[in-house]
Image (cartoon, rainbow over all chains, first blue to last red; front, side):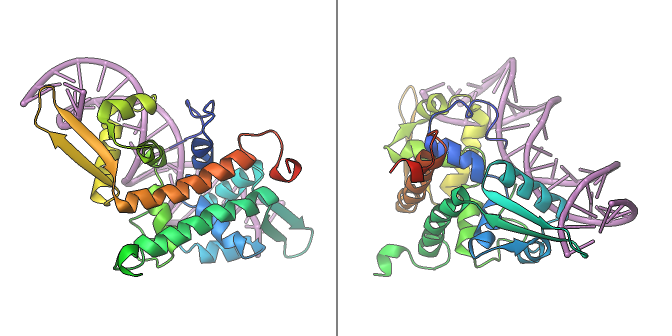
Length: 117
Length: 117
DNA sequence: CGGTATCCACATAGATACTG
DNA sequence: CAGTATCTATGTGGATACCG
């Protein structure tokens, strides 16, 4: 993986740049979950059933660094941390919607779109 | 990676299913290249500057198995093999277009969309 | 609760050389 | 030209335990 580093970093291709961001096993699913609104760490951990806390933490940090996700902490006991999407992140939801549409047409039906009218 | 195997294979979520297909370092870029029409192996190898023949071969086989890509061979000397998109593959281009649009808005400009009118 | 630390497994991809 | 074979590198993620 590591789509960013090698040669694609210099690439001007917007497809390659977007691919570099949304690649990675959980990234798209985290954004999908945050699309419906602000979530806490443990909420994400459950809805992404199977993800390890380490991986979730890493993905969230990366997304934060890329300006996709906002991390809001509250000095409470017990501690509370809320994750949400930035404008840049919200806009990524359009890509996810596009994927959802494709998935419904080709991957979650037994007939191709052309036969479903 | 291997987004397909573990738990997501059973997932009904069309986003997860689409993610499983387009994940992988080169997949989206191969489809991007084939979107503009039929290509030969060496053409792809050059336009995906840096990809190893082994990796390209593997990705193309996978895409063929998933019904995204068609492999057409000609019994000529020297041998000729042409790759193109199936209808299912062509439709994926809508997702790529969506990514391109996002990339232009957020990743290939120095100003956010809201400031560009 | 919301993580981090550590160690480990595995898939994916690169380099290089070679073949029908 | 269009690959395959082999061997290696590394990233990416999982398991588990523990910490503020």
